Length: 288
Image (cartoon, rainbow, N blue to C red; front, side):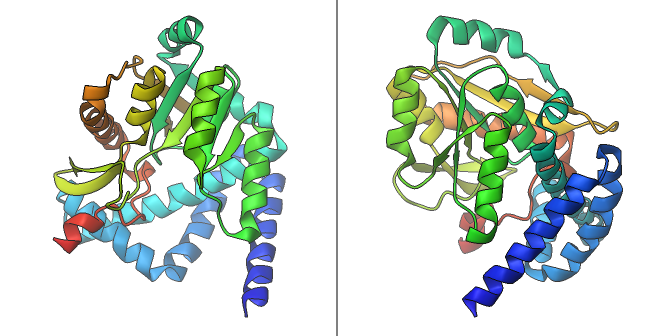
């Protein structure tokens, strides 16, 4: 059964890769519209989570939440298509991303020789990482996906200039990167559980568990912490925004974690349909 499932998923992934490679950049939104409808029907659980999250976070009606949820599904598919297409045309992909606020980041990089970038699943975070990798040596921490798709995802990131660190046992590798002089990229906006190195914050007014890892690493290594995010613009290009690098002391770890969450919330409100509301972010709130 597992073998057949693997083969079916592998064929599906390969098919989508071929479609993304063959399509033009400007055709991807229309292609994503068709594929997102299939995804909407195929994933009822994720559909329900998305509508629920939007309704409670943005305080909107069921109907408004469902309309916005459909846009979220479209965005997720479009993000995947853009990412896969960038594997065939890496230079063309990174040219589609504009930088805002990166001058100060470069100044701090030249001074310290190490940085930690923290972001969330907003806009096309893959292209954000690819664009940063054109400027600085960037390692990204990622959780391996299913065997059928992980090698494609990993190799595409490497084609875009990112070096990938497996999330399992990643702390040691992350420390090594920062001590030897490098930039680290972290996604830190999903449910973090209740283990060590986590804390509960108010996110869109409801309790959510978040990883303190970015702030902990910044305090331990002296690497400045940079919050950044990407938003897709109406013309199909991307704007990558970088806040001023932040220094974190041992007694500021919780404050820095809260700061990241607050800045992410502000960024999401600029384009709420471009965040991954499909994730069960508020497990803590539902349990309570």
